[in-house]
Image 1 (cartoon, helix red, strand yellow):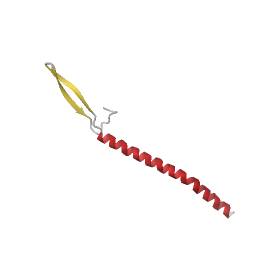
Image 2 (cartoon, helix red, strand yellow):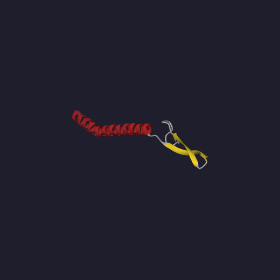
Image 3 (cartoon, helix red, strand yellow):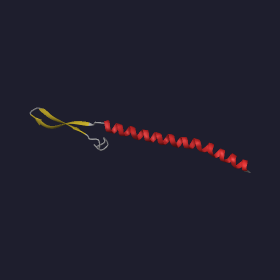
Image 4 (cartoon, helix red, strand yellow):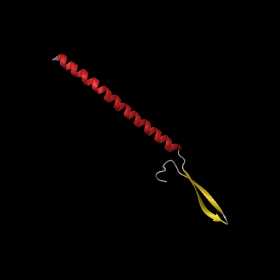
Length: 75
């Protein structure tokens, strides 16, 4: 009986190792994806050049640049 319990414990530990490695790799992938998104948002400088007035025949243009908090989805 003790040998059966020992065999069961070994089988359970073998089955749990691949699951724990899978969960660890998924967590690592999520952290890397979050870090990548943060870097991309920080380095993104979305700007628009708009004509604000027309004097004679030449337009006066103004460049508007989005801040870090204003992600492109909201601008």
